[in-house]
Image 1 (cartoon, rainbow, N blue to C red):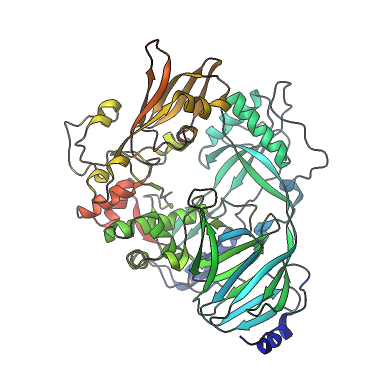
Image 2: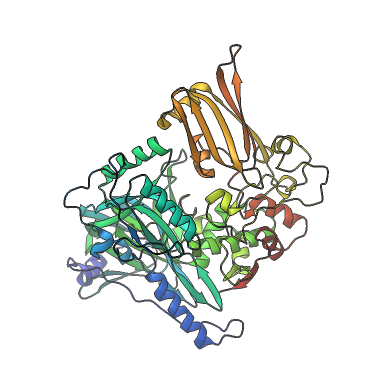
Length: 621
């Protein structure tokens, strides 16, 4: 690109854009008729869906005085006077409460729109960057927003750099998240409120997600969070978390709230390093035909041993926004189907049977819909492209086989017999038996998520998980995830050994001293445990929750396991041996089992019907 062209483009876009970032309008077009619904009805449903999703990221309820309502209606706020022995630290002076002050947050930058009835979602590619280089794969239009709506047009293949300057990090507070409950689990929520009252900690509830209808189906991802009442500084919140872990063995997360949004000037340079435009807080780039962009040195695997950088290509549009640290976040605004094309290959073997790939595409589509408005509430995107949400590499990660599966199931999701979107969760290897949702995550039983033997043929002589030691020791279980051509014996059955010193180090924060006893209990139908009793030289405590147990030991393969002490001649423990089965939580679809079932001749609706207790595949657009 010549410097003369750079000057011509600068004529349109050089002034610094002040004021609020431009918020692009949403496109809502008439969808094609579905199942007896006319175009107008579907279009109306899409409009309702769009409005509800935009309002669903985090809608706090008002904070009334202490309620005397019955347990059937959860309290929005439960302010209580903490006892002297409680765990609440002093409230920071002058800390404004974002949940009641109406302060703007990063969600104000998020947009979810529909094109041809298909939702488009903002997905984080990376953040915390000073500089990012990208190139459009077709003619590009870049909008600076602000007064005058400055626009830059550029040809395919031109190279551009966005640099963040004058960055100011967001100021945010946090509440300790004490629990998460399905929207139907009002009794569980009320019980937890009473428990924390008795412990002297003031709490409040907060509702995430939304319920809406489209094409005659109900999508409901609402849930309750139980939060500490006080909005704390990050430092105070971390201290409270440490105290809760010490006193109650409870590992908690933080619910983050923006008090003052981050700000920065974004500087756009051409390939000759000439500044051609400046904007406040955000730039939007798109190729009208949706061809997308190449982005240089995309960071991935942050916090993992495979952390690295890679040049990647993405369909859809790009947003360059300011992240919470006042640095640069790169966001891909992409249609759900194109998102799945770059996501499904990261979730399952692309060489797997086509019917298993279709089953994975349907479950992944439902899982993405279920996460909208639930995660990343304090960030300028709805979902991330890492393990925290779903691994997504864009066009770079696509494979012809999984793309075919996504296209063959376009717009399809899984619905229960009551017409509600199924929480279509999945894990890698169930170990021969799936698990009930309430055993793994608590809350009420979900009729679509019932554990059952995952056997391809009757096996009357094979012991079940109720006799867990015998079940784990049996080598001829005709399980779908064992007979699959992609089966890995060390994931179906496994052993993991820890020395006494390792166990003492892993459990040190529990404050019970050197470990003398470990006991797994409260097992589900698959044998997965949800309670670990830990006894030491200084006392005993309990760790509750399948995931918390696994995390305590550096992420055990699963909690479908037994644990035994290895002792010296004097009876003192020298080590601990876990014997287990499966890889993952075991709820919903077993991915390796789905491959085994497909290889045995089952279609993807049959596979999903089996794993989700009679649920049926249906189109939503």
